Amino acid sequence: RFELDRVIPDAAPGAESQPLEQFRERFRKTRAAIEDNHATAIAAAAEAYDQALADQASRQTKEGKIDAAAATMAERRRVERLPEVLTARERLTARKQKSR
Picture (tube, helix red, strand yellow):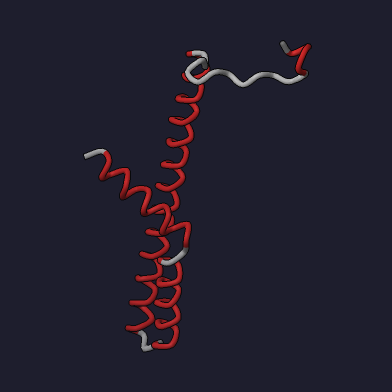
């Protein structure tokens, strides 16, 4: 048929081979695991950074460096709203809810 039409015909629905479906499922699971690991790493890094900033803001406030403490708190808020941090936290929350 290829010789006649010079195109590769589309496979009929449901005619895909079983090994192809297995490859797709393995790929999907691997990709999901990588995305979960990525989300976990981003959330952990954001949490560690937030804790360091909180400690610094506390020290600055105790030392009377109010402007510096305000800038540090602004940085905490900025990082908390970063799209990648929000996405990572949403993914982890969804994963926890899904595993229940």
